[in-house]
Image (cartoon, rainbow, N blue to C red; front, side):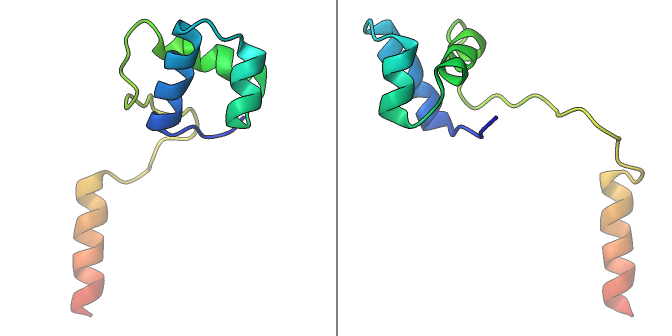
Length: 77
């Protein structure tokens, strides 16, 4: 899986709405056809190209406040 920028996502949606196939879109943008299909299904209906869902995995042990506090203490010496 590759990371796609919001502008590339917008180009995928625009090309698909203009009638291009997923294979043509992938060839033009340097992606696999399945990636173009996945991006179109995810972002096509909403057109919100900047939305990012949190990735799965182990949650952070420290909160953001705890991290800032620790950084402040470490800089003080």
